[in-house]
Length: 265
Image (cartoon, one colour):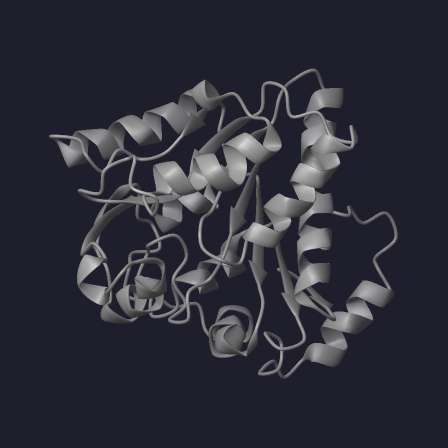
């Protein structure tokens, strides 16, 4: 896992956006459009804003780029402003100029949720897999809506949200009672299938989860620790999110002295 520590949340967004832009350009140079995995929550918003600026300034062509969202609430109308259909459209599809037909979100309104999960897995496979998956991390270490004790081999499925996750997300709703209890989420195994993983985290509230992810044991109690299994995972964090790490100097030493010929990915 590559650990990149920067000074501020603004720098996290800049570094992450450049890495995503590079992935899009590399796929374009190879004659194909990229397939991106996109996340909701507060952490990725700055990254999307930076990408949108690149698109507006003509520095990034997103034509034909496909996107798959990580998760969606069960039973929340797609038109609800906090459904992830709406959030992804508002923060990703429109600002980045993506074709809405190429942006997919799990269907939390399906009559058969298990079938919807299987269909979502097939759609990702039919697209050739995800080139780069953007991730955030919950304060309890969850990625997507894979709560603690989620199987590290799990696939897209229905889940019950943890009380901590509902508490954290209540700020987006009128009250805690309005936060859905269930969701559809890509599994940890699904996420690990992506060719590259890029996790962003900012702020003191994420410090414990970040430390457990990077330096703790591989454990279902911290689902994000599964990134330790991936050969091309990068974590971009600010000083506040990095404050509980014990090997900060080593991570900075690595960044200052990259291996000869090492990829920037």
